[in-house]
Length: 231
Image (cartoon, rainbow, N blue to C red; front, side, top):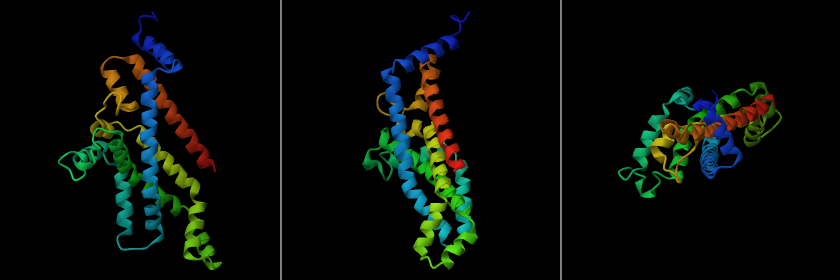
């Protein structure tokens, strides 16, 4: 009865693929990690300083900017994919870069996708620091730069948690990378798009194997996030 169940058989074959380090599984996994980690790195380089600027400087429309960032958390990812596709295509302003259907284009798209999330979470993390502490630091004679660096240091674990959340969203994304990357075998195929493709082709063993790996990555991110939050 077990042998006749395609789900059970697929699960067993999936375990065998992972244990045997199937070249296709390894290739897709490495590409997924590379694209998402690189996108998270660039997004953090852009979003963390901008989020800090929004928090530390008062300006007209600040509340509207923060509200907009929080609204963008729920931005449909396929919209981001569509916009980036148009920007990177031959008719778009960045078509000369030839990033469409390349890992570079996928990195750029995931970077754009998670920047609002990281900016908003950075503002929230810094806002969680007691304002009395900020006033105390200033009263002790710290310069503005020293005050900023001290507050950022106090909120570093909350900021790290935001970065981990950004990575989790990036690696679990399917719509944007499908549109911009094209799911090309050996070039732009990643865990999520490969799972969708193999499931549609009834290749359950490969889908389950890739799903187990993606679940393991998500579990690792959640464990890291839990440790950071405890700190």
